Length: 368
Image: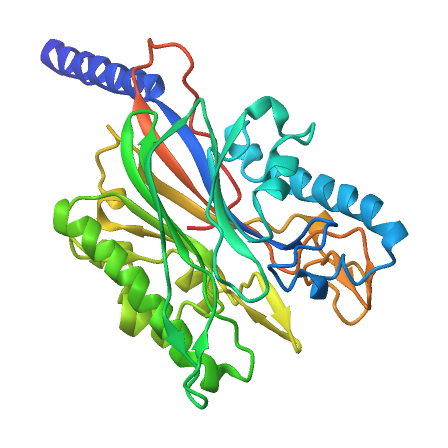
């Protein structure tokens, strides 16, 4: 009986110690996001661009200044909100598309809702015929860029064989609180002319994306790479499954493979980021390479993904109820946001419980 009591006491002590150890585990958590800002153009006509076709330039000149101010404010509100429920912070890193120039980005990060976060901007002008670019915003206190480059996409129309001038792909390498990561920001060619006719253009964009990833992995097979963007393709299209060879099951991703956490959200849950003709598309995605999936949380790892579709971002009535509440419609400003919902992932890293400035890993309502 004494031996039994002693054994139970030992088990109780071990359980207590293990429980305490679990309770002391703390994690840093950061949001990495992407958002198509839907025609974030300024009010100045740039003769080097086809910006006169932008919605804001098609409006009465007397309205443009106020509309632009409200558009920037609305975009800043969304950026400030993405991931904040889980992290208590705005995104550490966010890729954006459909921006005209660096000045509109400066106006965005200097909005009162974001100014205190001290965002840096990485932006290159691209040859896109509409004058729209991609860019990366980052909190200077959390991310330190080391290198950045713009990668030109050379594609041609299948019928005319003329070059299609579209967005470059932006590559930024840097350290997220000491961890080296690489981020690629994309905005692949649209489906103008139909999905089938335009498919080869997006496959071409996927091939360029794969070459960038391969070049990083040839230097370091364990490179932690994030590719994000508005791909104008769903996770099940050939650009992903054949060109990039993405995987939907994170347990089956090979060393140099790519995990797409949004594939199952599209296939199994029917979720999307943009709607067209009464159907959802999940064009906005964030992909990660295998090293983000390891179980060792001594460095930043992938935790969860989600579509940021809070109630205020959606149409409340009519035919487009539930779809993104876009900024411009029928030649006017709706005081809305974008025709795309943002997407995001959480990155987590275990830290010493005794160190200051750490955060408990909070539960969130997002889906894996």
